[in-house]
Image (cartoon, rainbow, N blue to C red; front, side):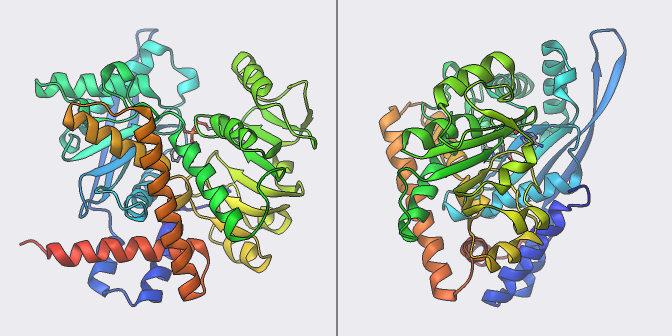
Length: 415
Ligand code: NAD
């Protein structure tokens, strides 16, 4: 996992899609190069009085189909190649669900667990100021990612609004409802993962009710997802997070697990299950595995011992390129990240549209439109996979690259 290169993985998969469809080499070169890369120093006065200098990035991968859209991650492992890979993933994801955005991503290399709330706010505000030339409702719209949330988005929106001297609610999504956040944003990624899981089980003629699921990651995506899968009739038999993992072959009580994790900060030690080594969740014999943590979790070793029949990728880039052919050979069907976790960006699009309209939709409308977008995207990718006789991942890349290429060709090259 240490040697995993997320940008290299994106390029490999892009090259593969380009070859499959005979992509125009000019377009191919454009997609292999991020449009803008901004690296910034983020000097912050810490609570003890000294100044710490963090490094941050904001990267636009492609903005042909619309303003850039992508999350902001605060994590000690953030670097330019990771942010570029995540930005490219956003270009492809927004194209797969056919929403009018390009792709971007940002991050600050820091450990939020070691920052006080005041320090976190100062990091957010200074980072926002430093990357502000790239941000705005028609330029690039951030959203939460790993270790960032609605509170961080509110600070970001406030900072940008102060700098520009106007209220800019459409400059971020995933913001609190009090600032124009959308109903249904929390949990939208998890709802999209559920929609994909249902769709792929239906196509494979596998019963959904009673099927067993394992879940890596119990954060903003994994937490609600455990609940949604259980509510949809699945047996969630194991869940892991950074603090440990728990297993109960009879199925975990999702509500009790949520209570336990809310109090203890981790799923480990849940008394409705046995503690297991986190890495062992992949070995468990089950129908569905959902990686919902960080990149590179399913490498070649994990792929060889994967106990699930279907993998639905809630996380971004959880499967390494080396693992893909092994999963294919073992007939394990993978619904790729750029399709499976696109529910979040779709809800963000709805939030952005509402902020620009100055008119809030009701939650039912958000949920219905989300489900329709996800189902349409799944159908398009499934049909492409069938037509070309390829995996869902390769098909999702092909669908996305075709849409971006069509837009590049329609716009032409400036000047
Ligand atoms: P989060 O920070 O809320 O949660 C991450 C979870 O992963 C936590 O439970 C953490 O304990 C766990 N984790 C970290 N390292 C782990 C390890 N080594 N083993 C097991 N668990 C580990 O982040 P999130 O928003 O839930 O995002 C999770 C993934 O989903 C990321 O890849 C993110 O890019 C992707 N994603 C998130 C959204 C969204 O709406 N939040 C949308 C699309 C994609």
